[in-house]
Image (cartoon, rainbow, N blue to C red; front, top):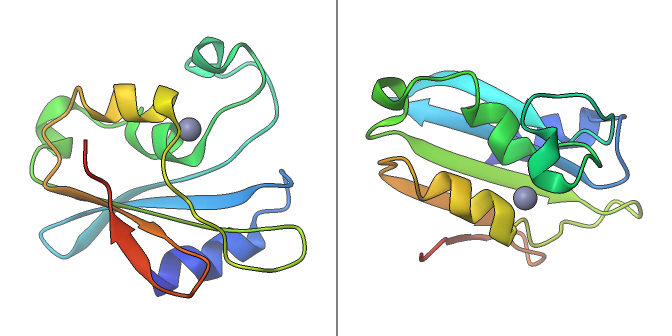
Amino acid sequence: MKYCLKKAKENEIDNYRHFAAVIKGGRLIHTGINNNKVGSLIDPLYENKGCHAELMALCKLTEEQIRGSVLYVAGWSRGNNMVTSKPCPVCQKYIAKFNLKAVYYSTPEGGYEELKM
Ligand SMILES: [Zn+2]
């Protein structure tokens, strides 16, 4: 989660600076950032307004790779405050297709919560 927060801060593409990481067996297997640039393959899911970090992190992986992994999402507001990075309904729908072990997201108090679907 610390790593996610650090990387999320480096995201200069979007106002909502989110970063997602997929960890499997203690190894980082893929990452994603929020992106407000249109044109990505999964972009139409968000009405062509860009793409969220969670899906960016998952979209290049196979079902097999995702199975049993843990997804972390963290983010910052424009004013550099930690925000609740709970995956939005679109992301949740996509995440639910896979057999993830758990999904954790950052909260404003500096902690994190597990996503219950
Ligand atoms: Zn989302």
